[in-house]
Length: 236
Image (cartoon, rainbow, N blue to C red):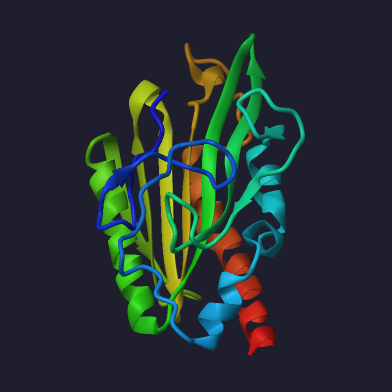
C-alpha cells in the first residue's frame, strides 16, 4: 500500500506520511515559509491548540465516511491522534490524524489514512505563501497518479483548492487546502477503493469520491472555518 508522499518544511525535502503520534507517512505539504511564529499573538494562541479538540475528534468525518475504527486498518472504535506544532514531519502544522478502518467486505478490510491540519502563520501574506506551497505539492503528487483533478473553491475562504487522483492499487487520494486570513487548513487522505463495486456489485462504502469531496468543501470546511475563527476571536 502506497502512502501519500509529502514535501516537508525542511526546504522542500521529500518525507513520508506521518500522522502525528500515529506512525504513518506524511502527505504533501509546505516548506520553510509555511508557519512563521515570532511574537504574533494569534499565531501564539493557535500554536498552543490541540487540533483534535478544535476539530471535535473528527467526529463529523467519522460519521460521513462510515469509519468504524481509528488507529490501524483493523481497529474498532478509538480516536485519531493529535500532533503539535514542531512535530517532526510537518513542524508548521498542528494536526488530528491517523489510520482508519472502513469495515470489511467479504473478508477484505477497507482502510485508509488521514491528516487534518491547521497551519497558523504570522500574517495573511505568510499564510498565502503556505497555501500556495501546499497546493503546488499536492498537484505535483497528483501528477504521478491517474485521473488527477484540481478544482478551486472560495467562500468563506479567501482561496481554496481540492486536488484528487487515483494512486497505487486504485486507491483514491484527496487533498484540500484552504486559506482564511493568517491560517491555512489542509486535509490529506487516501483509502481503499470500494470493494463492493468490483465486478459490478453494490457499493460497500458509505460515500462516493464525488460525494465526499462535495461534503468536505460545501459542509465540513465551512464548519471548520467557523470553529477556528470563533477560537481566534476568543483568544483575541
